Image (cartoon, rainbow over all chains, first blue to last red; front, side):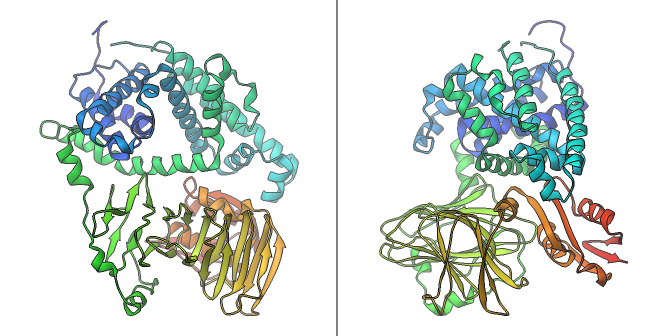
Length: 182
Length: 386
């Protein structure tokens, strides 16, 4: 353990759990391809923090640290004798799973989809609609037809939605600043 | 690990590109990933099937989140999660159903035909008439008498494996209540996504040399595995759709005046079960509608996404009457809506929502901006007044 540790409060723990439980499960699922096992691994990592066997300083620094902890636990699990017996159920090659590039790829995938999900959930209805249709590659004209609105309305709605997105993502970036190693 | 900071920034930029519907080729993934990984990431973020899969997984995890939190914080001294086989097996094992139970005559099959019975949660009705509540389980398996797995629950969907040895048609029925959607993979690999308030009856295992036939009430999207020797048919209220290998949506809610099939890929034939000779052939992008009253089929060109968006939780109304909108809302949100403003029924609306993002009141609030009305909520009932 390095530095002068300040343990997180129960409230911070709750926030940490709320923001990372699902993405970490999705991440673990890429390694284990099993819903129950993935949740067990994530639960175990969070349990260690709760019991202060693993120390995290704050939410921002915890994120990369938790992803690594989950990955390590997944790899350990795959090597366990229990998992070996079920080997036939797991289709991905273990060698590939151990590589850093796999970690990076799945990390970017889960994080990006998380950001998209959060962004969509925080926009008001009409702005969400233009964003959602735009994501599917629909043109402004097609969106206008679908919603029975003029192309100009769609354009201005998009403008407002983009501004909201930018604010949202900037706020998000503030949480990303720190890196912290145990 | 310090490199993760770089990847967080990258994720943010990538998310922005995708949210804005811009070409992701402009993003600098190449500096960090090889071509294969780059393609993998982009495909997983934009492919509708992948997005849907992730949403389903997310839902499963969401359901367990609180429970797991309590396990960690409430019982920290007694409950230490152990990834040991004993615990696992106990959790997974549900029950063994002998093959003998499956061999039934027609009379028992008729018993399980009535799908209008009120059900709680997504229900799988087995050949012997017994029911399993699928949402209450983390995982399950039912087995044939010889110990082979007949169906398993995996990643939030039911999966039937192909068992060449089975020569008997054994039926299961999957019943989806209002407010839910659910997926199943049949033994031939065909994937079916069922919409709210629907049921599908199908053989546990399709049999070699016989057509693949399933029975639908309500609405479902089919992705049929190609097999030219064994045509696939969906039968519903006297209307059948016959396919070889294709993707299409089939809607046949009893309260709707029309039964319709919309084709996204391949080709299908729609016909009255009694008159298979008089069939209509559909091309991708077309919809065939059977009018129950007039007993005729019309074919029209449609925007396919209007009819398949429900799989992603979308509620799309395109020049839709208020009456129809209320029916869809009742099914999608599992609420009862009573409309006392009768002139409203014929009003036409065009709007689009997402059931995971907007609640039923958000939808009504939006609609009443266009044509004012008031509503009140009483328990699970919504009452609309002029």
